[in-house]
Length: 258
Length: 236
Image 1 (spheres, each protein chain N blue to C red):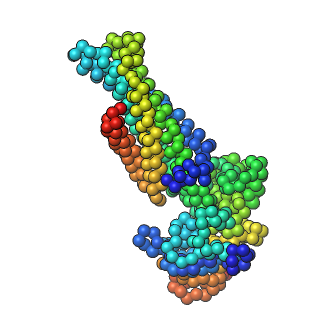
Image 2 (tube, one colour; image 1 turned 135 degrees about the horizontal axis):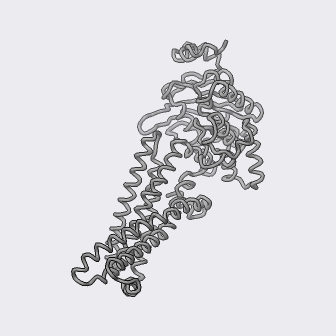
Image 3 (cartoon, rainbow over the protein chains, first blue to last red; image 1 turned 135 degrees about the vertical axis):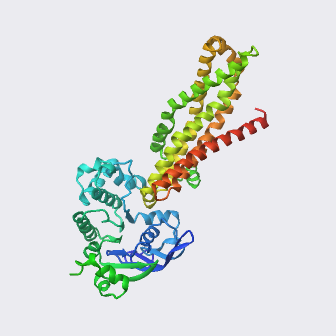
């Protein structure tokens, strides 16, 4: 596996990752692989470090140990320029969407193109409208400001923005949180469709059992900053680990696997 | 600081559209309030001064005092304090809200340095705009002084301007205007830094905004004192 053959090996490989915030060790020797074109669900009890893991992977929190290999390149070894290049390979959907509130939806989607590419404004606008269509938003939403949109539309708009530069990897932080069951189900469908059509690799932090069942190919469970178990949903269901038992066989999990 | 260096060395663009927008918000829209406050303060100082000078029969010296005071100290200081309260708080709240809503992180993830994109246009607008505000403040302070001198001190406008020509030197104006960009820089820097320290809660946003205004005003006054010592030492 080297930088010149990026089509082989896992999309992201995390090996012994350590992340500290202040003096507290949040992630302590976490290892897992994110395979190409899979949808991986990251679960764990609150405070187990799911969000921190995601934020560390996208470069928002410095790593204190271990190695993260993105598309065959060791992230820690990259210089500033290469990092920006690598960042263009992924899109991030934040929990609240994090759309720039002073820009319209279309301007939000165009933002990265404006920053990193030299495109004519016509082309930029066309691409933005295609992305908008891709995530199932009406063209009329293009000129609204984020404050005028509903929660579900904000998530979709933020997804369109994350897809602006045709990333290969998509990070989703609780994509279905705050959506009604119908909206959440549609969002899961959308993620699967996008994966199938665009060949995306998806890492999603989630609490939503339905998303895990419907969208995720594999699940990684964290506890106390360590890997608890990684595997498919059926492997999770068979596990006799107490927390997984409770998680997958609790009162809210009755529909899963049936 | 790194962002500043990178822009200064043309490695990264100065966001011109953002700069223009911030210049309008921070500087141009502050002109009326700065002018009004300076006018009132100028008038009050003049009235009190006339009251004292009248006992010695040298009311005319109020012109010298108003000119020197307004241009050297009061104009720039009032402008800086107003901007710290008005725009410093806005900068902190804006950047802080972006932190809470993860917009700040979104910028970073998109390969855009938030310092460079958010902080620099605001600081640059303040550095460029503060001399303008200081000048507007000084002029309206002087106008306030002239009005009070006429109606309270019986000094007609033509005598006021005549005396002004002798009392006011280029040095006073320059001393005042030299300080302005530094004060703008300090206010912008402190306000941005406080905004970036906002973490999580809306309570933190309130604390940081308060802290931004308090720190900026304090630093601006201390800086003015240091400048006064400095100018006295080099004999200006």
